[in-house]
Image (cartoon, rainbow, N blue to C red):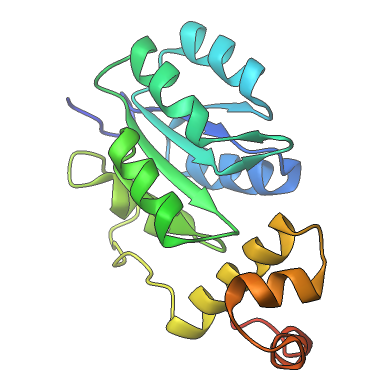
Amino acid sequence: MSADPASARILVIDDNVTFCRVLERALQRRKFTIAVAHNAETALATAAEFRPTHTIVDLKLGNDSGLHLIKPLLEVSPEMQILMLTGYGSIPTAVEAVKTGAINYLAKPVDVDTILANFGSEIRATKPHETAPSRMSLKRLEWEHIQRVLDEHDGNISAAARSLNMHRRTLQRKLQKRPVKQ
């Protein structure tokens, strides 16, 4: 599939309007054709009409999960490449996303050059340089996991600590520290 900026059609699916606006502008400056959707329902309708070659999907779309969009999006266009982004990275969701059909799974914050580099060599931006995909540090991965478990237990620190098999005070100390960026 040829996907130079003139022929690549990128669909951005994220409920964060500001993030979508910034990403949309950055991709348009690189001469890509862009469409944006902020929820699962709109995303599927937009995909059917827009016929994207590449799609960027956020893991959390309000109360929906971006994981549930991968198969329906691929039914619209089986050659479409889907990249999953998340602010709540975890190994199980990364594995599930790739098994379902996503080409990769990246943790936010992520820049447009990293996104394009992860789509592979068939998509070329007008910028001359490409960056390597970002990797989450062990501390960042731990922070994301703790946040996900805490969210699963509705913010109950004692229940989250039991689930994480750690003392409640240890968890509280970890939560008082600022999250590592990457």
